[in-house]
Length: 281
Image 1 (tube, rainbow, N blue to C red):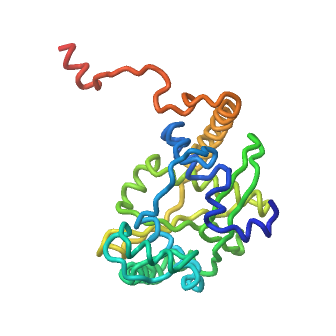
Image 2 (image 1 turned 30 degrees about the vertical axis):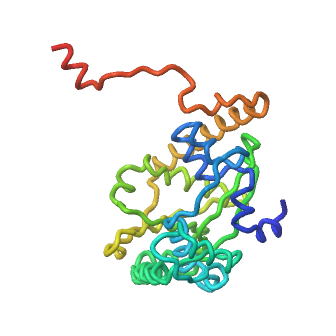
């Protein structure tokens, strides 16, 4: 696939592309079952429903990074408090190729983005950045096709800065328990995409994280992954890629569903150390 084809890919074409994404590697971190459940390599994966959170996230990203595209990508309609009704379905049919959002969602998203722009550090990081096209490449070690969509990138005097915008209900938990979100793995995967395209190492990867709790949207954090965590995350990413390659090869040869089972081997029910100690007393 050449650069022009990649640039013209729709969201539907991108998500259907049989390639490894950062979210797929993060799913594999939970287990092979979770990887396969949503994998584009799985022709029988359940169809993903458009949740309010997913559509709202897209709206916020577009308002922040590509505001000139909002009218092209979104249509405003009054469909009530849920997307699971006929009014919403009718609005989708009346606006083919667009995401349907409510006036309330647009107002809230605009309010959130205004908070980002008022945040000194976040606005400075985003200043001069441009939204990027999808990246598609082949992993050199495994030969697996890979893909990603980087939120924004900019060139500074020091080099390339890569930026990812996130919303969260608990920023302290994201910072304290990095293994839960595995944003560190995502950062390493995106940095690999940049290396492949630009043939240079990014000088910085920054997460701009905003609280999505109502009334707390002014809580904004710019975060970098610390060095040791970067190194471990890259090692985990490579290990997961290797295991994914092995399992995909096994699947292509045998089509054995047990390859993707949540619990392929016998497990043991075990007391915690606290209870084990109680039994010894």
